Length: 259
Image (cartoon, rainbow, N blue to C red; front, top):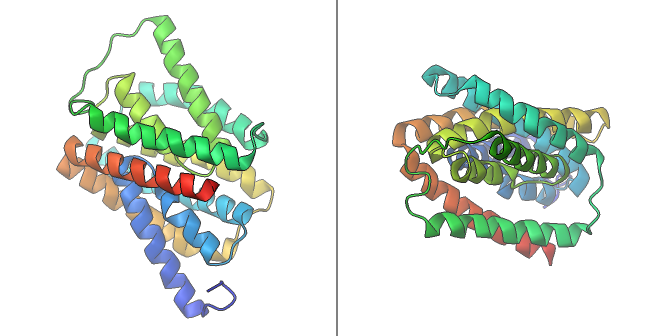
């Protein structure tokens, strides 16, 4: 059923429900809201470019909701958050303005394979992200870490979904954070700041379904807060499992979409 056939009184509650559930899972796992929300927007009748831009704007509220919850715990090192901002934001800006060289279908397939690989890699290492193992990084290693965050930011600005999961695993494997801490940084910096920059770029181009945004924003805000609350209350083990399940599901979804 397309959006033209759906009664308005049914469309708005449906948008709220989809946004709430997808963003709650995303806030718990550190990414993956697009796994549910973006395909639903397309199925409801939005063309892909319009659905992508609308999803991008709505996802900013996910970061805001998670930020409100994590700020109460004072669990973030704002110096490290600033490092993520400086490293990743230029990549987001560049990615939002750069057409990928690879065809869209091939890019989607490659992103799907990499995302499945993230989930399998995490599953193969049971102790990964279970505890904080803060690494003593030299300046060159900090540079490498920042360069990868720049690359993740570029993908964040140019592709639909998946970058939150990439950022989460990179923070765990390279910087030694546990999954709970990594998800907190991902939601605040990627969900709020990076996505905010991408949403601003897309918004200036006018590619947004504004009438759909109120319910999507409300669902993202509530889902982000509730998901962050569950992550804090249940600890890194549950977050790790949620990350792995969503990585496998989202990667498979991207692979199927590429065919």
